[in-house]
Length: 286
Image (cartoon, rainbow, N blue to C red; front, top):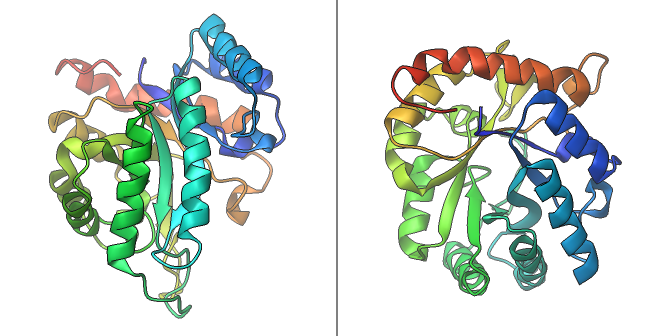
């Protein structure tokens, strides 16, 4: 199971040592590090702290897939500040030997009846290009997550074409295109080789039709066709990680007993092992 990862998002307040220990205990090979002092790493770390972090991961024989930044470009005022933060995180990613830095585009909203400003698309393209050009000097990629106004393969395919940078790729968060009624097969076909990383999660639609987001569940207990998505990704040639993004920090439905990382992470490993048994016969080595 060399391609299973998890985001450290639910490990808010943990030490890096505790996160690494849990990763080893559960059988993960890779970690996706949330950037921020509450998650054990930060863009403000000095050179010695960065070197020590690399050493900890090498000793544990764990890889760092990417840095999960909170950088978000909207095409409006504030993008320069976001770009400044991105540059700090790109330097951190390079020092920690991570392949990419996750960024968001657009505005966050959970309900259809919540209005947000119109995005300024040309400026978003420009901001992503500037991020890519800066990251390229560090041999780091910019990973745009399927989210907000850019949740679908349809929207991101055009963005990738307009950005036109070889180090611009996509994190396929498998629940968000579904929330926008885009089928996984279509998302995968549209984004193809630009899929660098996959966020695994599960859920069900809320009863309220105004809710844009789905209600999250444990993996395997919702309506996201995870096993089918994995099969389609493997057939399409995807060879990146499958990373559990357990959003305890943001989701009330996950902030209840029985939903802690210590409980959920082993269940995720077991689910993925079961899901991938048939794929091994086709030459996949998850």
